[in-house]
Length: 294
Length: 294
Image 1 (tube, chains in turn orange, brown):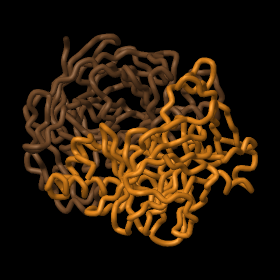
Image 2: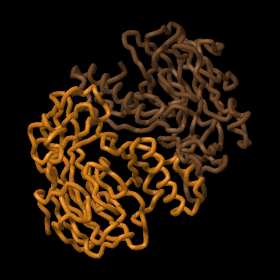
Image 3: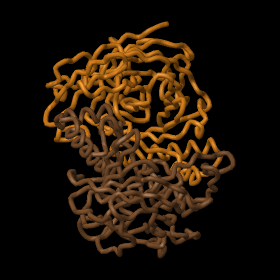
Image 4: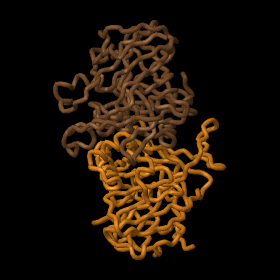
């Protein structure tokens, strides 16, 4: 199996990124991700001169045959946590706790036998996932910290082994970048980090020619979810709900208002993250209501 | 078991409400709830002269011994759906779909053997819960449509049989009001209604003397959740996260920043509803992290 090393770093999603690996559609490949902080141990300057170093992902992966206006399906086949400890960093004055985080604090968390040891009494089962996955956006470049229609820093904790992400393609080859591996994170990522750790992910890309998407979509064995990002949670919710109603309307051949009613009784509006420069909402329905893969 | 009929309607949470039933702490009682629309079948004027009729709950229940600055624990012991069909109503220009709901539409949904029949192909298991539960607020009166620290229209779909709600008490007797029974609703209540139906709920109130709360709290067998309401989801999130961090800090004897880190890796920020005049967020953690009852 071919692989792409964690040293192949990109700092923005862009059509100009150097290509680190070319893959065939349908080919499984291994991608190493650095921990979110690319090895930084002193977090006193994370909002200063170290700021760019904390926002790198691995890439770019060129998917042969991928063309604009098609959809890239990325199957997350296998995830491995690559370190025996992770780190949580609370960022001062940012995040959802605002000024109550008075200064940067980091906490090293041992990871043993699938469990995170927060302290002697609090032990939590791991749920390894990737925070960032995206393609080159339609125009210009978008820093990896920012989530939008191209993907990016969506921080959907359900990006776990055994799921599939669908992304709109804007450029030939799609130019995928993946990173921000978490051993564990809650919906929200409220202090601006989960348990950050390096990881190894096996991925397989394929192309869907007869479908278009405006925003990323995730399918798990039990659930399907639309996502959308915007400056506020309220605006992101409206977009993600609209995306879901449009999809349900198509799949079930019902009109928009009936689809909206279906969302109201069967769809859950949950936060992916509320701390990145744009906030991301997911609208989650039972997989049976969105019988994907498309 | 004593009971309170669905004809005992109140339209606002207020210390001035007539008392429909006095109960002892620890006594189970039966409370009937009208459907949200108090029997309206024609929804063409729901935003006009019928607006008040669609916002009634059953009450007020006076809990003997309840005093301000204590906490009221309400155990939701048994729920029964009281009708064979429910109704979903999409409100025009309101809710999260905004102007895409061009006019009011209602849809009658048969409820059979624990399943809602949305159409011939879409059938969804019921999850009966109450949308509104609250006490008389500190000052004045608050229409039942509005959620806030006293409870009210929180629309937490986890207000199901077998859970317990904790509410701050502001007046002697607490003056509980309960209603807005749903056969099924998604987190968000995105078109402004779930499957609305009449219900019968068995409740038991008890008093916690040595604890104070600023906002409602829910405990289920698996989860514990803080809630908060505000004009925007962003503001409601900050309040609900702060409530959770304060609680975790007390329970685990850790400082606020460590508690915030714990929320970031183990707490989920989910929407209760985003359509009422104030929006409500819940922050959900495993029950093991908040070993309640208090």
